[in-house]
Image 1 (tube, each protein chain N blue to C red):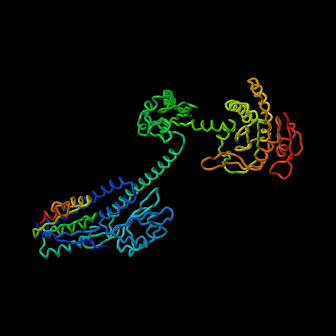
Image 2 (image 1 turned 180 degrees about the vertical axis):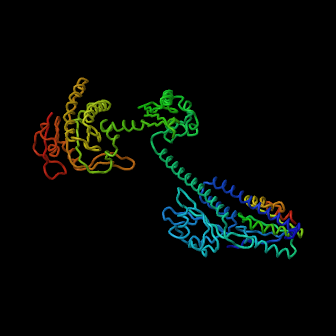
Length: 520
Length: 114
């Protein structure tokens, strides 16, 4: 029989109690720190902060002497040290870590924490350590990083990590992986949002988003401008307030709300803060992932800019050309470029002597009526009015937009100009004025077209020999005559009954020029 | 690794030990060494300034407990100043703050201990 157990002294019991109490406190600290770590890392939105907190707190919980977090560079596939704790940072940064072999290779294939041993080809000298513990950071089922702790401390010196340490670190690295994933998703979301904001602010269509409750949730810069209000005045307001002056818009929104179908209105008058703007406006229902109605997006295109361009252009080119230019900007040739051009010049014969008999206001009145009737003909045949100098008209065909039968159109214009002039003359004769007489010259060939001038004043025009010869032909044409060059004749053939006339000498040309004549 | 003892000063009979970096067994042992030396010189009031030690582990804390036990036997006092919130929380859980005061600044610590 064994004797009675030796009596423990009160002092021994007290010491044991204190130790138990201390162990219990350590476990409590472990749990508290783990909870803190979870709360902390889930509230972070920066990777540097995340890794610093994970490394220092896990080192603290596991009593490790030092630690390191490696993160895989997506381009080089090298694992970079992104957070270093209690290690020689300069020395570590010079080392290349990859998953081709060694401990990272093992981590990548096993995807779970392990205590590193000598077989894992781990360079303990690099870290000046004896014992190491490693855990994966995983994103999208792939290894993206590693959390490594070194040398577990005890009061009696350093020791290897235990299975409990392994479990604890595994839990930390799982939390870290989730936090990493959240931060990456947030980054991606912010990037998409920024891209979306950039697109929205740069497009010329006004966008207004209305949520399910009828409140304005989003507007882009163009929408704010069209509505004539600041973002602060718009966002959060109900559409009934925003469009209080636009009953029709409210009706259309309510229509979309009930029918949940897209509605489109062309050339709609939007009542803005102080003006009415002509717009194309569409209302599209928005559906959530469950295909349930979740709001409306309004898209507004300001037509006033387009209309302004149209009306400005229409002074110089036909409506037909304006529409084609607006439909296809690429067809517009406004740079300095050599191209085939047909040029028509017309001039009033004897205008100087006639004008001496008229008052300035009578001259302006007659000239304006004359030019209007001539330009109507020009536009009918898609000519571009280059300029009016005094009583002379200069009209282009083939620029800025090349068309079918530009030269034939120029000739048709010239012939019809005489018919229009006859009608014009009939009217002014009745008013007691003398009839106007004109001569026309047409040439075709290469010319340089583009915006020519200085920064202060720039005009779209054409220059070159072809133009000069066109002007000379006009000055040779007598009243009621159209003179054309060989290039024009070659293109129109015999269609318009032009007759060959004796060659003419023109300034700047060494040889006489072949010309053909049409008499009205 | 850099020396975990940033500096040791005395003010009004209080030994002020400022630490730096991870307060683990290395830092704990370094503090213990300074403490033993000063205790032999007859100093019994100690203030540890941890403004540059934001991380501690339980081994570091256990060394601090050793110091507290020694001081209790000579009727001395240990106090802390400039604790990071996470360090203060650890001290609370480990029970250190039941036996030691925590002060906001070195000056207030010296004033109370001297």
